[in-house]
Image (cartoon, rainbow, N blue to C red; front, top):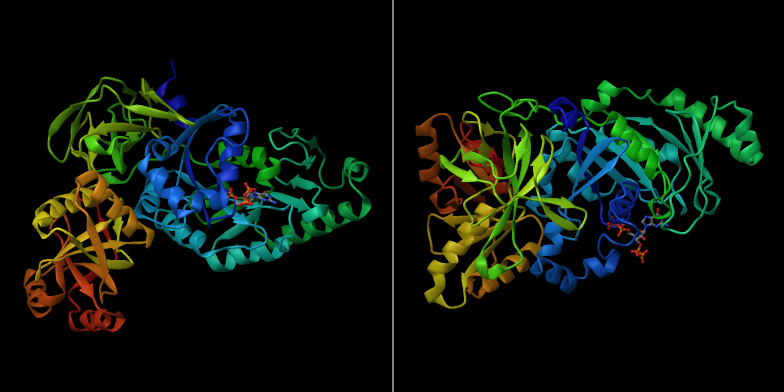
Length: 530
Ligand code: G4P
């Protein structure tokens, strides 16, 4: 059996962040291929348009098994255990995506070499930055016409305010893409346009860039360009610095082509070598050390399970400490109840298996009937509250109403449960009978409507509102808070935990409230109640 220190230090729990189409699915597939978790490429899930077509996606959501199974993928490589957490990649965007990033120790940012930093990547990056999550960058699709590498590096530096250290350097691009030179290990890897399922060889170790091997293996103009560009890059970019990377200030950049399996091994090696193993988790009264012998963990995601009729859910818990063994008893801190974890699940590519044991950094799925919520702590030790698992202010707000008015109460219950699950934000205005649902991506409204209908048997309609945004409000001085609430009662609502929320009609409305009530804080995020 692993010693705790070995078990923890070899774990790499990470997520991939990217804009749709940059190649996340393809890369995931290839990571699993290198990790030996799948035999042939093509097994992850439908790609591209097929996956994103709405009807397909709804179907996938309805047959929840698939998305549950692919939420966490565990595989081994280079004596490390990798837990890859899926950030849903469909057009839509939900809080799940954000929250998944609270459960990882590092991230891989995939960029399309022709497109550079795109909007979704930037958003996800900002979430990583909130927690100083270290990021390794993979510039994908070098086998296509791409932008100049210097240009791409410059864009990452400028738009994300990150130092960039090239870890590999591309030799040509598009049809002339020949491979990469590994700058950290002095190795030349050449692209052989093999069948897509085959793994490329490990490349040639070189004695630096002046090694004559390069001249023997590459055409003259390519070697000359490589030498010149690397010299320039070394002059312009900082050297790779582990500490700076781990602090989230610097990103090593790998170039490659996921579809050709190229650059994937180097990327994985980079994550194995440099990415942090589980770190102490921010918590109160004190951060939880992964080597603490008492098991503890927090729920960061909840997913309704395969059979909607039974309302059973899987709560995804990230272990923060201890050696988890199946059947053990833990305390649910929020309710004080003891839970026996007899049938937790672990995820191996597409198969679910019973989790016999797990360590800090691992994710286990706990089937439950709605008693576990996002942010909840489970522990064998003393009371603990994990911090930094935020809810985000939704960007889109709509009114929801039951088509049958007699079902209003059922709707209230459904909304409460879905909000606890983290599927959307739900607000009850203090004046009026409507419920307001807030989401970050428009497709979520349809998913909500579908779930409320199928799981709770309440057909509903969503209707537009004149609302612009929601802000949780707080003030140190209760009187200032009361004055504010009295003056703005028409815009006040409560979320599912009973926390007060200000619903602004437009930017001007929000600004005005902020100006008039300087003692009140208008918060874009709320820590999940624990
Ligand atoms: P996503 O999950 O980030 O949305 O991207 P996905 O992997 O689905 O890739 C998007 C498209 O980019 C796919 O093409 C995929 O084949 C292609 N792609 C991924 N990596 C590379 C690469 O390294 N080079 C090239 N040239 N293309 C790449 P598609 O046409 O949408 O799907 P398909 O018909 O190829 O399956």
